[in-house]
Length: 393
Image 1: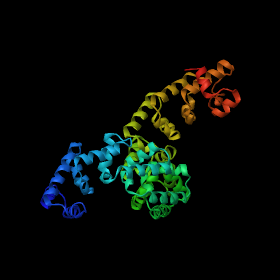
Image 2: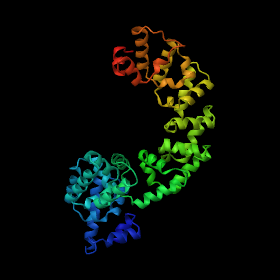
Image 3: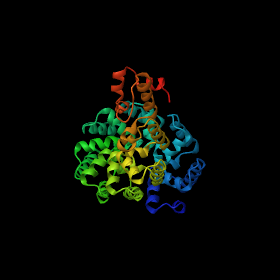
């Protein structure tokens, strides 16, 4: 049997672990070989690759003691929960030990967590994201949830965090407290960490050195400590980005003509700035120039309203052209943030004021076009939706 396992690239330690399991220590050598080969071929038929099959058996040698009929039944038990065939294969690949559980055990684990977190569909998705959650007892999960609540989270906040990062359900609270202490050493307050973790709970799963490196990388790239802290609190998903990626994105944007200070300012005003491919910045920049703006004007506009890189350009262009049509195109450069309004609403309000109320909207009197929706509805007793429907563009 040892020779057979060596042929399948098992290490000496893996071979010893495999042969020392309770199911195998009394079996005849020929039986072990036959069971292994049968299980191997069964997994191959499920469309696993050879490497994936080796990994599954290494993680859970016990499954080689099951017949094909038994394995079929166990797989069907998982499907009964509501998982598709492909999802079941993903679960087994990540956590093959699930095939050693009885149907009752699996159902109870699902029901117990559903009772705690509510929402069976979300719970099933949680187990799909982290199948090894099946290995943890309900006592462990309940204890961890109580410990997390004691940190200051609300129940609904914690539920969202656990659905997003299921490992929180079985992380020892001391581990999370250590993470909090390490992040505070970087200059963040406890409140900062609570705010960041609600958006990016995965920061508690990162190695402390990794978090330190990512924070230090921001300083290396020109952020002050205050700016780096502000960026991380404003956009905690920055911790998901590789240091080299952030540096590369900053350089890409500066190569267009922005200064480092302008890029930093933009990132503090638009949390998704570093999410785009460099071609998007170049493409948008050139399209603004095609509308007649100079390099400096485009830089000013996008620095004042960096979220413009997140808009569909065609909609922004249509908005600019409409402002030109009604003689308010100076707004694009002088009050770029006014472009946040939708064109449908801008058009409807202009029509409402000029045609229904007879008000002359011009460069000296135009701010009423951009007043808040609540104030507009209070003043004129018509909702945004009703107005757009009344004056469709």
